[in-house]
Length: 320
Image (cartoon, rainbow, N blue to C red; front, side, top):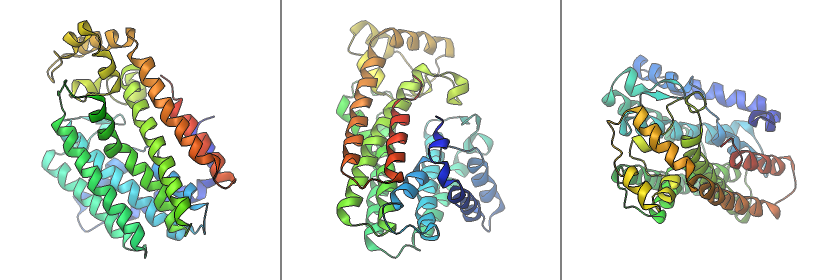
């Protein structure tokens, strides 16, 4: 089953979120509006808003309240992508030119800031100090994750803990916050919204590890960018760390630099795929997935719970 079919019963509310996203990035600056819409219209899984909506189904679900959280979290995610593309000097995002490619780095940074500010403006409509504390802590950790990613570029001596902490901050915590804030906005009790946070964290870790695997196993058409792009940009991911346990492979991987040709990087990708690095990475991803499913076991049985289970399984079992 395709991902969107799993939550098709939310389609009318997702359409409201899409409309609110477009309305939110409209502003007094035509250029900032154009850049924001350029990124927005590139599409995306909208997985964070979906998690917000599903978490809200465990409480008093009101789309006109929940949508503010869903849109804010998607905007924060979008802003981080704009900044990432500057850091990574990326020309393509989802098969389309990035904002930094279409305009320039300085404009992209201001566009990311603008989108980010719009998210914070939306969250002021949520009258709950707990929600604002959760969001503030998430943004702090996300920002640290951005800095850590810059610091860790081409740092081949980093360890597994460095990697796991980085993806926790860069990916997992925003997904965890999406689950928790959707529940908080719907007025669920603390024990339940904390469980949803843990579910989101474990799913987010599995999600990012799977993305890092796909960077080696996916095609350019599937990825929207050339395979091996993360390694070429100096991002040392789990498959690379496992592959570097082999000294011969390590001696090849540490030669990677940003001016390598695609043929050269393809040769290294082939070596990594022939090792057991991909299989070992899948195993770690599956461990996080199992933990996520365990969290759901003692939660109220409803359609939202079943859909969260389906999405978690989908995320962990994407085509390798």
